[in-house]
Image (cartoon, rainbow, N blue to C red; front, side):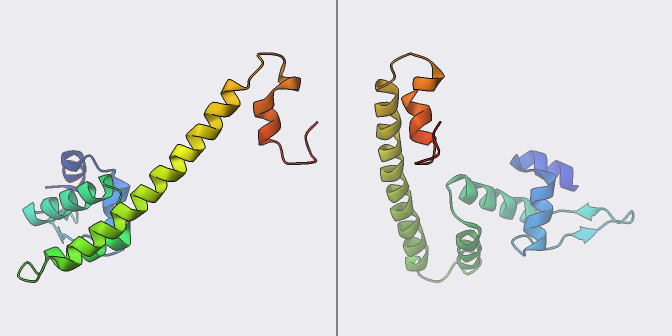
Amino acid sequence: MKIGEMATATATNIETVRYYEKIGLLPAPARDAANYRSYGKAHLARLSFIRRARDLGFTLDQVRELLGLADHRQQSCAAVDAIATTHLTEIDRKIVDLQALRAELSRLIGDCRQGTVADCLIIDSLAPAGLAQ
């Protein structure tokens, strides 16, 4: 299959497919007589794996590690568990941060007096200290 077909099948941008090849996440495909990339089922499966991992928020480095582990299926999955656990811990930290951001923004909105922009508490809170007009 051609790059556009594989990109469409995995909902991936063509440039992203090329980038994954460039950084070694996807092996370089064979070329056909017209010098077009020719992808096989293994490429499609690997790109689908990468897309799913990225959709779950794994970093490219984590995806690289997971692919390496997936390529050696006879070994223990303890390393996979460690990567996933580390990622889950990071997600939990981000959730706490987002909840704090939400609470602060909600407070600012709640304090809004519906006056003019000149008196807007939200604008004032965004302006650097000492530079507000």
